[in-house]
Length: 126
Image (tube, rainbow, N blue to C red):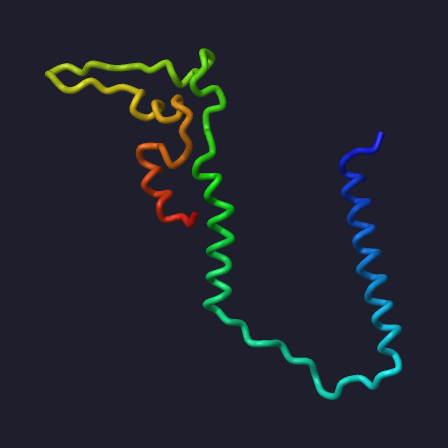
């Protein structure tokens, strides 16, 4: 049986052989020409375009994570976050319960639906 690791390694080896073969074929065709004079120079990097591309790519990568369902058993009978506890303090204070924090998760929400972290995910791209 062939494992997935050896299949990936085989694909990488074939890709490397193709790239190396293409490079040697190009070198063979340009062997008759004279080499270019002077040292090679790199082109200037446009910082605005580099940052724009990075932000766009990061947005596409982060957007699915913000909406990823954190509780795999949400909306099911096996959901442990659906069980809440409420405490009624003395002296007429309002009751305090866990439903405020676990409610968005047991409803199938993601990071963006959490009470405190949801607002912070707005600064992330995507």
